[in-house]
Length: 67
Image 1 (cartoon, rainbow, N blue to C red):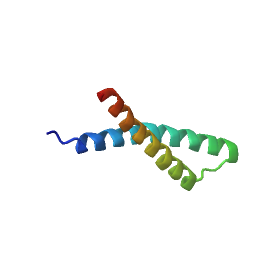
Image 2 (cartoon, helix red, strand yellow):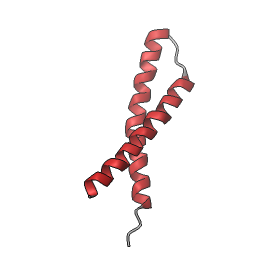
Image 3 (spheres, rainbow, N blue to C red):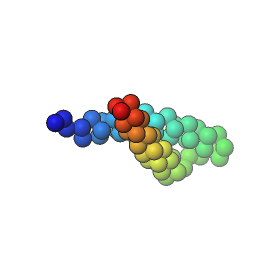
Image 4 (tube, rainbow, N blue to C red):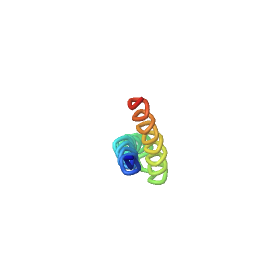
């Protein structure tokens, strides 16, 4: 029996980082371009939200490819 917890965790973190960081950078650029200042709380929340969604989607995609 294989342990899949480390693989799932690694896949989730990879999806979280690869999706969240570019999204946060784009949001900060649009925020700066629009207002001239950057709201770091808004960027952090959007990074966490978008990264979490993409992390779960990466896990779900892995389940579909296994079957």
